[in-house]
Structure formats: C-alpha cells, structure tokens
Length: 240
Image 1 (tube, one colour):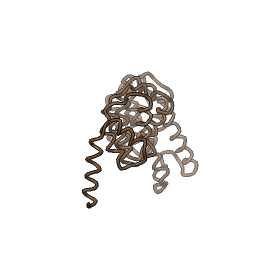
Image 2 (cartoon, helix red, strand yellow):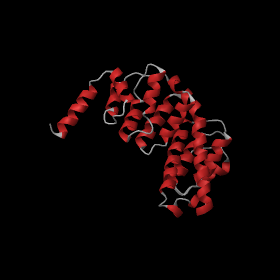
Image 3 (cartoon, helix red, strand yellow):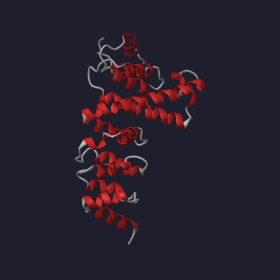
Image 4 (cartoon, helix red, strand yellow):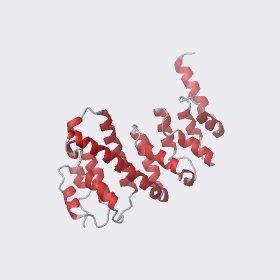
C-alpha cells in the first residue's frame, strides 16, 4: 500500500470513530490522529473530558492545537468547566500561540461568553502588563520604548513578545464592553501602547480606547492625530 492510500485510510478511520474513542485518542500520544479525533467530539460532558480537551490546546503539535481551538467554537460544553485558575491560564497562553489561527479562535470563543470574558480579563491584563515590563527591560539596552523594534529587528525573542502583545491587546479589545468604565490599569496600558513604533500595537491600543468612557483627552488626541490611518480610524468619531 502506498503512502497516499495509507494516509487516506487513517483519515477515513479517524472520521468514523465514536466520541468515546476520540477522547481515548486524545489520551494517547499520536499527534497524527488527534486533529481528526476532535471532529468526532460534539459535546464535552464532564470536567475530566474538559481537562483532556483543553490539555491539547498548548504544548502539542501545531495541527493538534489548531484543531482543538477551532473545535472549541462548535463543541457543546458548560463554560463553568473552564473557570478554574489553570484553565484560565491555558486560554491566555493559547492567545499567545505562534499560530494566529489558534489565537483568533480562542479570542472568538472568549468573546462569545460574556461572563467568562469578565473572569479571564484580569488574566489578560496581567499578561499584557508583564509583556510591557519585558519591553521596558529592552528599553534599558536599546533606547526608547518607541524605538525597540527598529533598533533590534533581528531579536527573535523580542519580536515574539511583540507578537504576543498584539494578540493580547486584540483579545482585550474584543472583550472590553462598549462604554466600559474608566479602568486605571487599562488606560495605563493604552498610554504605553500608544508610544510603540509598531503601528499594529498603537492600532490595538486605540481600539481599546474607543470603548473607554471618559478617556483622557490628551491620549485621545494623540491617537486621533496618529500618522497611521488604521490607528486614528479606530477613534476618529470618539468624543470625550
């Protein structure tokens, strides 16, 4: 049997398995079958299944993580299964996944569940603050915060942090409710984000600011006058 036919049979067999068999696959180590197994799971029925499902979201192969994240959007489950500290941390780590498809799916999942979004938001804020603190360390070595990317383009670790910051800000922008009350920690994040050289960070910061009631006028004007169209477009009709 050639490799193509063998792969076809693997896929065919995996797509015909029961939900119980699918969870058994997730308990194993076959990263080839795991992505397919997710599509045989329609419902997470208890906490043990929830933990097994969520476990695949980080520290596994790229196809497994992506399939897990995408299936979270269609599988039936009680969101209360995922309200413990470890689960919340796992979701925040998934937002920082190197695969943007994982990040997008998890952000959409969180935004669908308003109560859960409020529960995880402090964790996301903590992660953003930690990432910004790391950039401050770079500032000591490479100059002003706004120059950090330009002065060290080849620093893979730092660019990865920039990528993580982008997705965490996107998550915060999606789950902050319209006319959200003034939050000192969030506003401080926006102040710092507004000074980044990378316009995508400024854009995500402006998106969050647009939802904040009684936003500081000087901050609003700074972003309204940003040289980048996408940044100022986020707040062009925002009035203090």
